[in-house]
Length: 336
Image (tube, rainbow, N blue to C red):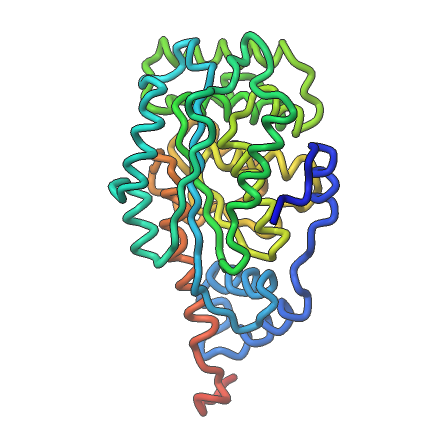
């Protein structure tokens, strides 16, 4: 089995033809919600989440049995500009940690019953330093999109994508600025913990990239200033839509990747909710641009898909109530 695209143009076409939620299942879930043994609206956003999930799964009384967490890792040539507090070697070291089960995302995936896979994308060949030339060729970005697409298990019923890549908050900031507009200072943050001088360097790098390339097309922006792991996340989120698998978005880097889809095709993220608002500078602005209200706001800034994985519990709770509660008629309770 292969990804159904070999060029960015073909990928764009697929986004434009993506399936929609099942209106019949949505209506039936809405009707069921109105008959459950609770006052109307008493479960707040949990009710909306359950109805949304039911529509994408085509089942008015769904379950979450097979969530999938996928971590993509990539290295960035722009690290040569001193934009990170850690060396690029840490990316491979953290991949090994994921593979041995020692990271936070391993614990969260296990806690919420999610399978977890890690895909390292050409770590020995970082993307080009985008202050000197485009980060990737079209072939490279398409390959990363394909890897993301093929990583999604069609039998999963919920997807979280996470990332690891020293320097990728700089890439994500440049991508967000290119796709949504604004100045570099609106989007850059401290990432792995850079000091004030490092933050200034990051802003300068992003400003330089914005002046260097014509990035009117979001997919071209992904090629010029993105990273392999960002492209892979975008590919996985698009594949989830193809399979009608709901998605929980993670933090700043994941949302920057998802923003490419949103700006390429209207409604491309209708199957996705925001798991949390991270402490990384620019994430609140990015969520506003995407029109997504986060489920959690706990000051997290770890990446790895950790905030989104934690939000699996919220969505599981919503579905447990929606599908497990009885109706007034079933319970023999008056007032339904």
